[in-house]
Amino acid sequence: MVPTKRFWMMVAAGIPLAAISAWVGSPMIGVAYDILLVGTAFASTFFAPSTARLSVRRRLDSVLSVRASNRIVLVVENGGQQPVTGVLRDEPPPFFDVNQREFRIDVSPRRPLELAYHVTPYERGSERFRGTFLRIDCPLGLAVKQVRLPTEQPVRVYPNVLALREFDLLKQQGRLRELGIRRSRARGLGTDFESLRDYADGDDYRKIDWKASARRGKLVVRQYEQERNQCVILCIDVGRHMLAEVDGVRKLDHVLDALLMLTNAAAMAGDFVGLLVYADSVRRYIPPRKGRGQVGVIIEAIHDLVAEPVESDPIAAFSYLSSRWKRRSLIVNFTDYEDPDRARELSLAIGPLARRHLTLICRVQDPRIDEVLKMPVETVPEMYRKAAANFLMEDRRAATSIVGMAGIRNLDSEPQDLATNLVSYYFHVKERSLL
Image 1: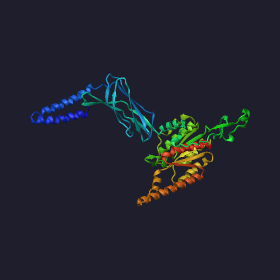
Image 2: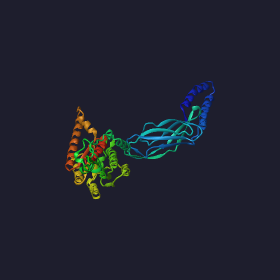
Image 3: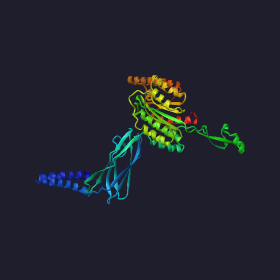
Image 4: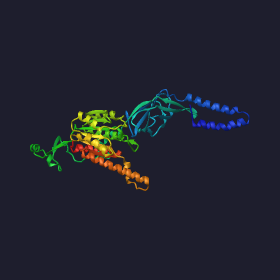
């Protein structure tokens, strides 16, 4: 039994009665009032609607997306004979941000009620919904009856898989530009023959098929499509360089969101996708395969990755990769390097691959560095802060130059732009037939 506001108002109303009864020499009148009030409230819980046939089901995606708003739906069904009114409270994992925790409900018999709210998890991993609590209104309004419904449910938090749905939808509608993804308007830049069609104004003369034109008696051009069955290998450094945070989120988490978007784009384009995870040794290797099923395999492989406080060994990692995969591919390495020494190490590791493959290093840039560089200097601490930011940027530029001289391309993006810039680069590679 949980007392209501009305109960406490009735208790307060009994205080003057107790005072008067004590003044006239009959204190038991106040005591009897309180006993009667408590007894009535307690007895009213026995007349509350039964919850024996009340059920709550929770509908949600099989996996939740980190740092994204995930929709949770509660379906309340009343199999009894009486309507049930009260307050329902669902208990998501404790570190989730929840937009609404309690709902006022009125569930009629045989008429399911749906309630929706959103949760935002901030860490990847395994969590658990802890159940659902219901406070049922009792007659007279002096108390509510609290019951706990067994709705415990495990849930796993993955990188932002919700973004993949938006990507798929916008791609089907030809609206990827809304995500910031740039695609060339030029068509027919692939080398795989698709079909023949009649010549139209503006077509490139080099695409005219003269033999087919002679047979048909009119100009006919060849149409080409982008090559399929190409290969993208995604390499993730989970060493100490990925422990740094940007806007309170570790660089590794930003990387995983971008990697997931590129994996989906490559799978939709019909390309092979593989994965290499390394630190001081190779942690995981998934050979390149094609198909949407490979996206699920990679999601399972990366959802629980954590950065480790160890020095990475890229030379050993890419030697391992080169011994297992020879076909020319786009190799994307997600890592970070802040100084020329680290850049030379990466050049030694990836440089030999750059002779056969198209190689790209992706880094997460901290926007606070640019903010510090643009700030006016008014105090001594600000002067030191700006000087440190300048030294850091000079080191990054020197490191980028060293990597570039080894034939390795570099993509340095702020967190909010990393995924879109990476997918735009992938489309650029496909459209220009660089593989």
